[in-house]
Length: 449
Image (cartoon, rainbow, N blue to C red):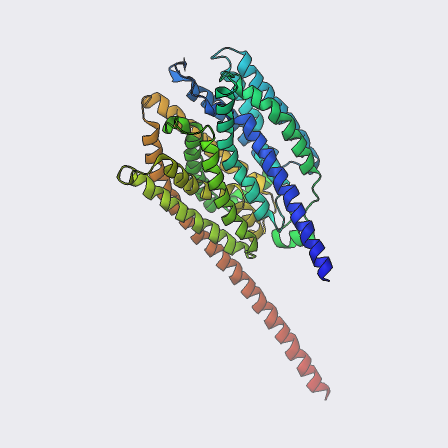
């Protein structure tokens, strides 16, 4: 018996390493295809009055945004057999676009970055679809989720290393990194495609995941319209804030005197902290309790972020301390919704659907906000200070999202009470029925005597 249990534990560990490790590495390589250009500053280049860095970032984000809207349909309806094909086509398309970014002169190479974003917008949903609906999805999703944090800083650091140490131009640096990342994305996608599907125990705890057609998606949104609207609004501002931090971090702080790997080091510490917090959710069996814990943790992080932003000039935190604190406070709520929350949401409410639909929905809305903010900054306040913008926005987002997510907790609690009420009513009904049958049988028996 002990030997069987020991063998089972070994299998679980190996599965976690296989599924979680491959998903982490696969999305890390997606970042290598998408984000290395953010390490460049592109000084003294303007396009139609915009800085070249902003024009490139907006172009890629628009492509990414269009892809996210397409993902609402594509990922919701994606069958297991088509996942690897989609990953392969997207990786090749994105890498090819980076080559054209180096080949074409500015500003025409901006179109290449648009294609790069268009290719990669569905990748998170496809990779996550291999992991959802399992007993250990919390842990697997946490491992996948930290790729966003680690890979962002790592992509910048690798970009700086390639430019500073290998003397590659800022226009060809993304293509060089993409040439290594593309085949790795495809190989890791193939490895994920060999994962076994969720078993009966997984399905009993987390609900079987199914595809959703157009009418089913509309019906699902209407049923939870108020709650989903609140969550979409909160994630809109979280995504905007995250994109400003990730795309313009080198503009926010001058870290010239630090190592090229400073972003990777800070984000690694943030990552390990979040991984430890999210991994513990695996031991929370109740899906409702898991949702409450996630929302409470998000609120604590958001309030902390608002306090740091409001007292930035009074507290005078060193840049590295500020980067760590703001990164941790921002990524706890952001990653909660990108990883664990909707898997538990589906399981708690017994929804017939998949996580990809919800994540594509919040991403599409979120990236719409990112484009609007970046365009507004360039049109109305072209000389604005990115640090000031980020601090002001962090204060607003911290307060607004804390209120929104607290309201969401109240709605979820109300839905739970309604379900308990229906169960109680149902049990009372059947208990009364049994009592009536029992009385009838007793009466008949007495008459027989």
